[in-house]
Length: 248
Ligand code: HPA
Image 1 (cartoon, protein in one colour):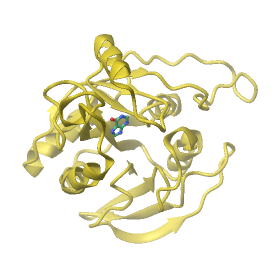
Image 2 (cartoon, protein in one colour):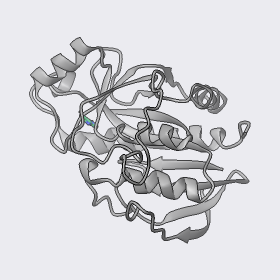
Image 3 (tube, helix red, strand yellow):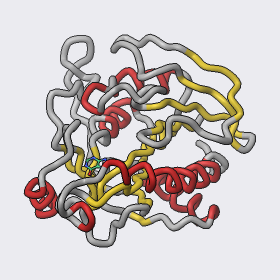
């Protein structure tokens, strides 16, 4: 089954016919909220709001391990993560939607593995290509079917937050090769890989990163909602087309 993890601006799916909600406990604690089950265009999907349904959980306090564990326990095979980001690359203007293909992890202090060496032996997963290539392709195909412009590839920098970055930090991320910056991409992607889930992300640019474009003198949070709302409607449109694409 397809699971969707919604981020800022996507705490629910408008066209989801909800069948039930499941409160879960995992060996790693509680997920961000109940897992919502329903049908999207006749296909069964599950949905989880990463920051909780009332958006109360900051990025560094999300229980990423519990979230992915719960989704897998409920039968998820594919996980599409939706995440808002700041645009670093000059082409990534607010409103752009893309499917990143690489990650640089700047987070710290997060529970980032299931293989802690105690309950499970130390294991080093291959993470050369952090996102599942087939699922990335399905998202891009779905975007085309939906008639939505969606860029293929880009390097996602995962920062710790919850504060936004300084202009100098954004310059450093750019020198490192990052195209966009967000706070939730890791350890989510790595944990999905540890569980053997197919995982890919849809990144929505909701602002210019600090010091860039109209964020030159500061990131204006009040603008983010204005950009996020129509962009998330386009993301829903894409998601409705992902569910129907081959499942195996
Ligand atoms: N920085 C980090 N995370 C973000 C941003 C940003 O500019 N915008 C949305 N999530």
